[in-house]
Image (cartoon, rainbow, N blue to C red; front, side, top):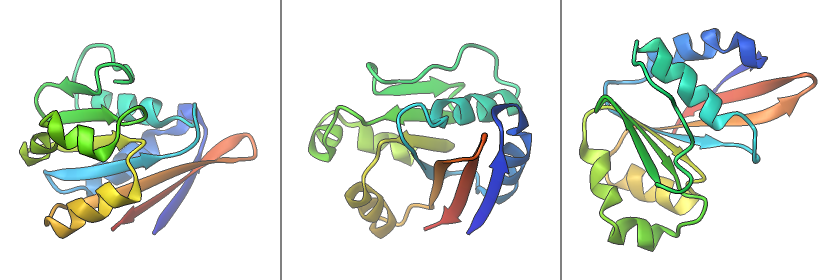
Length: 137
């Protein structure tokens, strides 16, 4: 596990690290309290890829896609069964990076058992900054 401490304006190091370690297709669980910076991190990753446009939390749409290479999910209001019924599970087969906010351990274990590359980024407050704990599951 790698831990990086950074303020919001210091996310470049985290983005660079993720760009180094993530394979071309990966599922990344973003974990943290409400307003921890999960969407902000995703926004910085999208921008690092040169993708233009606004990056917003997919709270109501459940999924945002950025140039068919970055997929962003918010599962706060949805159970795993409903996620599967909506056909969103099949989205994980698309080449690219899939960032999942509010995904639970059951979904993570299911994806690992299905053979996907799964990573976790846990964001926790740390003094005036945040600690980003990054690991491959």
